[in-house]
Amino acid sequence: MDGVDLDIAPGETVALLGRNGAGKSTTIGLLLGLYEPDAGTVELFGAPPERSVRAGRVGAMLQEARPVPRVTVGELVAFVASLPHARLRSRGGTPTPAPMPVARALELAGIADLAGRRVDRLSGGQVQRVRFAVALAGDPALLVLDEPTAALDVEARRAFWAPCAITPGSATPCCSPRTTWRRPTTTRTGS
Image (cartoon, rainbow, N blue to C red; front, top):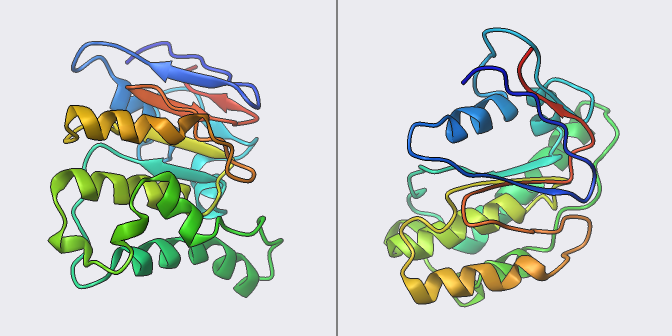
């Protein structure tokens, strides 16, 4: 990747499209603070990405993740939803808005009926939808999806995209078949 400069306005949806190896996932890694840029800066909401992620303003569904053993779908989504809020309160920070209700995140991901099932006993497509519910759980201002329909069959892909027109509280999961960023106030990559 070289010379990427990207600004995304509130309410705007951006999809990164390109061939394999074009740098889409690397760009996402930079956006989330997983990688440091060789040159230039990356900002989310006027701060370094890791600060915005830690504050719960960003929900992400990355390409690869392993199922968490011995927890149910509902427990996992509830745990993730509570993280930024509890951490900010314990440090005396300003709490972010309330997380999305777990039932709503599960509903939007199409897995409400799986709430009591263990994550490590689900099919690949079901785990993918759990990962989407986890991304939604904190009701983030920015939703980053990297290849969210990988491992889903055709019917499951259609079901996955169905909630993308729904506005769940403060976050709108507007999605694209590739990579989507949602509602940042300032995002810059490159020099």
